[in-house]
Figure (tube, rainbow, N blue to C red):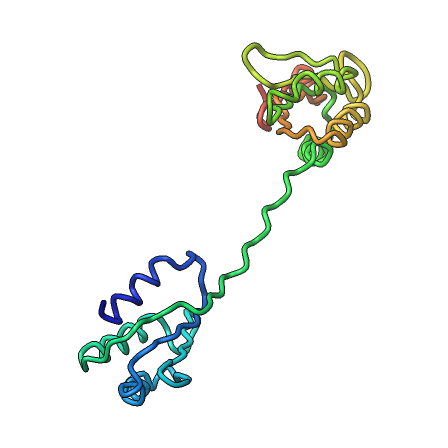
Length: 211
């Protein structure tokens, strides 16, 4: 196989995020000097009938330059074998840890209007395997489960009325975190105490809008 096609085949199998590769080109010893001269831009290191090459995507001698150089060898009738000696990849970013339920709760509270008084919230679990245990740990929330879902809904009262207190809601969510039960917390509806003259009493808000 021509050298340029050997490189194309090797490059196709490289990891998607490769940055640098080390190659060994083996040619007949009588062709080694001429091959090294034709590969001059790559600064090859010769050892007997082997030429060691370094190819980088970030600068210097890149993959396109290597293709052109190998094509010159092919046209000069210099054959050989091209082998992969090493590859360097971009470091893979660590996956972000899912937000805890307690932190989601604090983030949700931070977005509420200053005069909120009551909340209707929903916890959508990541797995149905956790549903029974989550309902038990969250029993103080008096949660309900919409049919056909793996969600628990509950009400929170800031001062008085129907619903658990905000600190108790947070404590229940912390218990779920402690047992590795994850999910997504959503605020469905919020009741805000506003100027009764201007608005005729409390206002329910959904997605930040009065309804």
